[in-house]
Image (cartoon, rainbow, N blue to C red; front, side):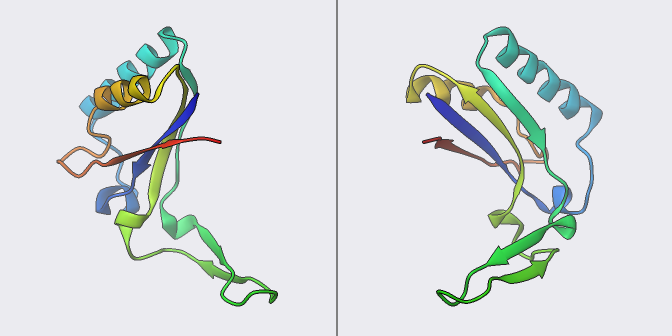
Length: 116
């Protein structure tokens, strides 16, 4: 079963601030554990939304609208993701619970979603 751990953006990640060296080390260790367990498929961080482009479809059948970032609501944005291949929803939750606060400063939030 594939699950995506979606790391939600914060004001710091949207400002392009890198995590502290301690958090980087903790995330590296966490990723190494995922690899060692054979469950990590892919993990990537994303640039801030200031480098992003949003395509929206406000009117059915009409041409989509292109909007360049930055986008204002950081809580609705994604800062990165980890894709894992596990045996159950419970195992995915266990792995998600082991992730260090991905933003630090108590700002981190992870959304866990199963992939079709």
